[in-house]
Length: 164
Image (cartoon, rainbow, N blue to C red; front, side):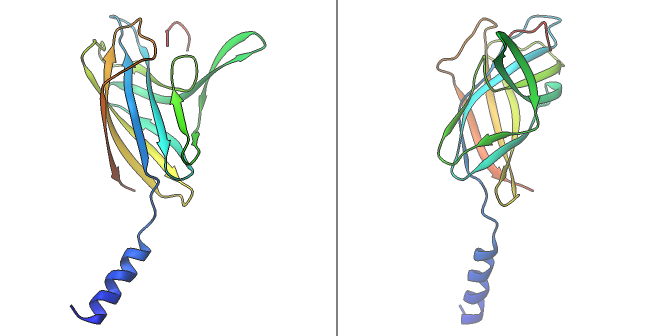
């Protein structure tokens, strides 16, 4: 190798954007019954650097939103959020009764044992985005938090009436 090649290689490596590496643990989706049009997706996210979950996509729903549930004047309220902060090194729990992902306008019944594909889009402090492909196991409708099986693979690239 020539010194020029090595210098070019080092310069290109230094110029690579630093992506937010995010670990996804225990992803799962609550099962549904026929005619049910919404469900929740849950997991734990841990980012190595300060990051934000800015979007979630799934082919099983017409709309996917990041939501928060919290007590407000003695009433539990749910609202869509444009993003969710992922502080460096701190696990952020997406769980029933708190932060979660809403799958709205479901295109099919979600049966226990099914796998729901989710694409998480995370943005680092440097504005670079990373897509994380997740397969979330469907649990029975009455499921709460607990052990779940699921897989996450990281790759770089640019209402009411429901229970969750």
